[in-house]
Length: 463
Picture 1 (cartoon, one colour):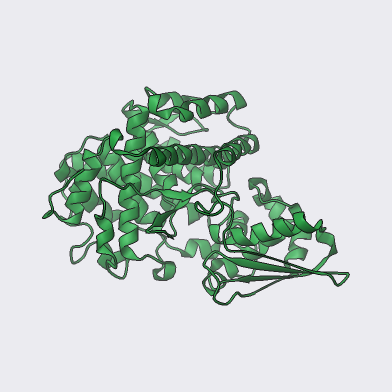
Picture 2: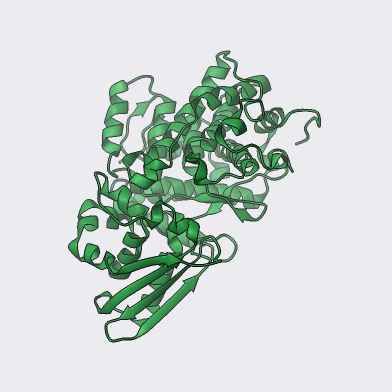
């Protein structure tokens, strides 16, 4: 793509969303998109019946409305924006889906894929799009969201959960393309959606059900914004850089404005980390260390006297370093807690969705073991590193360190086989979609570029 050098970043981004063609995408980026669609759909299956989701599904069904897109797994068609919202929330339910883009080689916290994949599939089903257009619409949405994120120098200290901010901007791009907006309407859609951004990081601190809500609201609001723009509504002319635009309201300014348009139309940014464990990414190094100690030393949890976990100070100071307590939504308390996750890995020798049932979390043995765990700062350590030291009852001591947890796209990636195995594990855990239908979905996704209608996938993903 080439864009007028005098155009503003929001105009250039709007044009690129609409002008991109499947042939502009390199094969590695396309394969990444296919893998992320597979991963997110597996997480929808696995998360379908997680706490709170049935109540949400029932509420959306009560609202009724035009039968446009499928509520996956549970079945039934509802307006596309509501289907995308529910499906995105199910995808996030075990905090298990693909995440984290690489921006100039640096990993930046984000959970974008669960929103953009579900937005593309819901609108794709409504308009009977093919696989090539599904991939293209997904990738232009990811690219916009990640460029906006990268330009902000985002971190959690401002209190925003970026699943409720940049995700909505990415969903607007994906929806706007599939709705056939023109460039003025696309720019207006971005202006409309900045009036609907939200999401508090307090949900993770408190372990509340709402931790997964902004991801779904972003899908819903992105679609609504594109629809409203198509109906003739206008929004602020520059959603990003105007005096009261995105960067003024939601970040500490635009730190890296060149990120918005650098290599636009040539490079399409995507998320690149695939999670091996259903838990907050910054806890994965601790889990890796725990599992490695068990495997390499043939240790038994009942023989452990004390555990010392060292993590970087920002992780220690975050919700992950809190003392473990069980509140009204136990899953939320456990999935973001280093003590619970380390104890779980050492006692159960894995970390799986089944370990976040209320019964598993309240288990007396695991709560007794948690009291053996001490957290401390790991000075000058890389952002995702951890060191785990174990003292045995017989006096022996063991230690393990990692700075590249499983799933790191550069040094410790999940393989294609790992991603497929994870999808199948989610199917087995959920016991909703039949194994035969799940395998048919994988076949369609493997050759997604040749798929004639995305509806063929959604029909298979109903229990």
